[in-house]
Image (cartoon, rainbow, N blue to C red):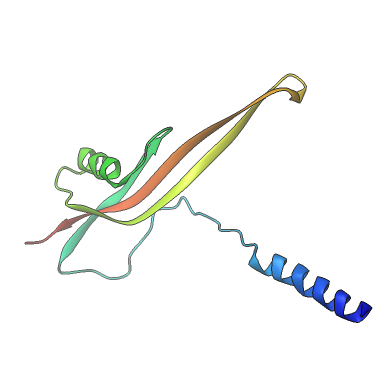
Length: 111
């Protein structure tokens, strides 16, 4: 009986550690090894906001940078989280400030 409980606990702990992963998000610009006859890659677009992020906002930002932009591909959304603590750290007050960051690649279709 003790052996079954030991094996069950061990397998649960192993499953817990096997499911935890960390993703390293690179801030380097993405490069493409192929060229397409259908579209031209204009460049990377970054949009940051504290309250609202979405594809429309990213597309507007891309069109401000590249007026010929038709579409944004390869989109990633990240969240920057900063915790502001006052005197005595958690004892008095703590506020959470979040900023959302969207990145993508602006393209122009060749007609």
